[in-house]
Amino acid sequence: MDMSKAEVCIIGAGFSGLYLASRISSQFKVKVLDLKSEIGKPQHCAGIVSSRVVNALGNIVSEHIEGKFRKLVVLDIDRGSEVLHIKLSEPIFRIDREGIERSLAEISIAQETSINLRSRAVKINGNTVISTKDRICADLIVVAEGAVQKLTRSLGLGYTQDRVLGLQQFLRVQHLNLDENSVYVLVSDTFDKDCFGWLVPLRPHVLIGVMTRQHNGKEMLRHVEKLCGKLGIISVSSRGNIFGGTILRGPPLRRVSREYTLVIGDASGFVKPISGGGLYWIVRQVDILSNSVRITSDLSEVPKIYSMGIQRYYFKLKIDRYVHLLLKSIGYSKIVKVIGALLRQFPIAEYDEHSMNLLRIHKFVIKSSQLKFSQRS
Image 1 (cartoon, one colour):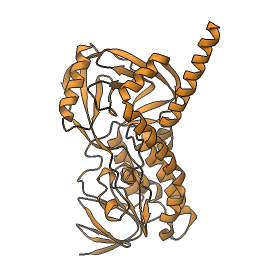
Image 2 (cartoon, rainbow, N blue to C red):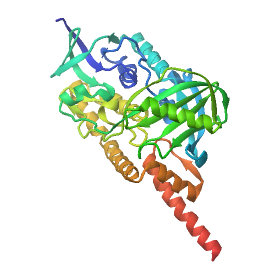
Image 3 (cartoon, one colour):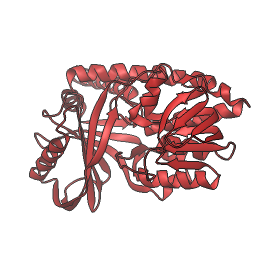
Image 4 (cartoon, helix red, strand yellow):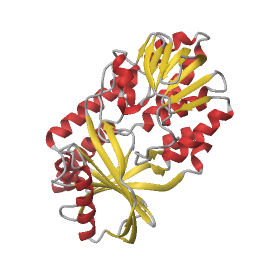
């Protein structure tokens, strides 16, 4: 088997791997491996991101923005009622993630990154990656393998056990009775206690999705579509292909590096525990990693520097994880209905800060109760 060399070998040509490559390939000789045959495939992500992510990506993302939203609306599809309106501190966006990945690949290739598709990394042995095509000797190895976590486990770094299925589909609609400035979060008594659905208006389409712990994801998606149709929210003229896959919900890995290797993206378990969203944390991790390679001229030291840099985020995500488990014990649907009964409209929320939002809700409820009490007095 042939032996090649690279300063940085990235395993995974998804968003995290390609974003990292685009950030460091002007400084280092970078090689990217991935089993898939086409960049941006398979399609699996809802692509809803915060202004922070869009700002971090800069000009790369501008041509791939498909929708802009300023509010979240929680909709009880069992009863056809809007439970809670959440005004966002900054807009959120629907982005074409597949298109962004292709743009990131183009930027990386223009900076002489080598992207090898149909090449599966089988094993990491010290500073050598053994793939189905060759062996790559690298000063730094970055595992960006997504939810698979096969190499991550082989390195003894752990495994993210909390996993759900997320499926979605683009529907072409004749009629759309939704606020097109809002993303709709769907709750139902038929969902698992810590799962929900979503509707994203993108006229003439709507993106419909559902999260489930069951194996009947397609049936659940059809069920949600039928309920929305009965409520007069949508009238469907045609349907696209169903897409999606495994969504990780945490916990984050305590150790994210070993010897010459480190882990980023979903493979590290750094995701928002409530929604499973990972793009925000990928941007944070790549920022830290990009800064780490500037600190030292010895790439073998980068895993240690990177690990120290993300420690505070690890503890933050652990707190978010505990909040998620508390909400799960009660049930998402019940929680938002109680909050909706107390508030109806939540004034300002940070899209990426779930625990902070719940703290703000708690404070807002207390202030509202005190105000009502003083008015009665």
